Amino acid sequence: MFDETRKYKETGHFFLKADGDLETSCNASKSGNGVFIVNQLKQGRIDIVLIGSSGKIQKNGSFRKTDCLFNSIVKDPQFGLSWMNRIKKENIDGLDIYWYVTFNQKTRDIPLFVQSLLMQRYFELYGRLPDWNVEF
Image 1 (cartoon, rainbow, N blue to C red):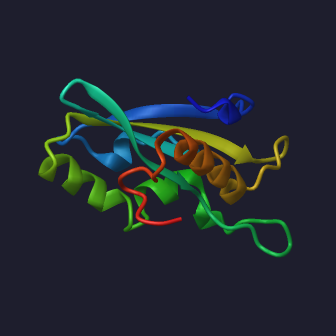
Image 2 (cartoon, rainbow, N blue to C red):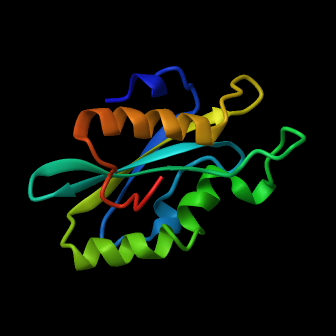
């Protein structure tokens, strides 16, 4: 859906169901920073429900080690625990989470910048933000 993500070489995705474990299911990078897109599978439909990013770049051009994609998905209280609760509460069949490392030795795209591009594309298509993105 997003052409902007095609250029990233370090990427992957994983599937999460209500009876799954987010920490063991998540295969996102533990060293890279980037963006992730959460797709909801519900009643035969697939919808993007969240576009997120990991970490904020520091003044010196680095990120805190704890700001990696894996930690942003699994350990951020805004996401991790609430995802499991939402799957159950909203009768979601599963989540398909795609992640992209946008900032590493070869690629220097700031995650928040890429997230902004993706949010803009989504907004252009649907006239609103994804359901789980409360604001941007």
